[in-house]
Picture 1: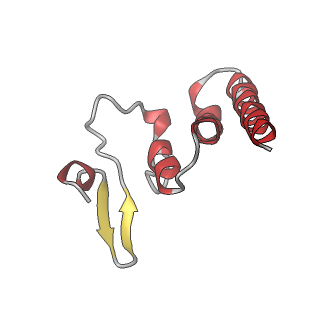
Picture 2: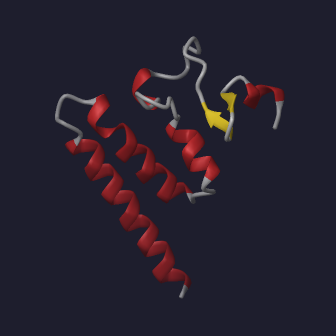
Amino acid sequence: MTEHDEQYYKRNRNGFDYITDATDPRIPHYYVGRHYKYEARKIVEDYDLSYNLGTACSYILRSARKHSDYGVSDIKKAIAHLEFELEKIKNKS
């Protein structure tokens, strides 16, 4: 783990927990979970998701917190990225 990463992590008895630096102006509130303070980007990174899957995951995680349309636009964007991933998989086979 790099020094840079350590500012985003807090050690607990089970290991490292994804905790964001709440003072970092680059991270909007809707990118961070309410209870455990997990950042969408850290979840995507931890699971080694592809671009399309990671983007879909991020849109879903942030959907209800970002827009006034109850997340409908972000869910549609997530679906589009899942479809892009399916096309990529189909083209490989």
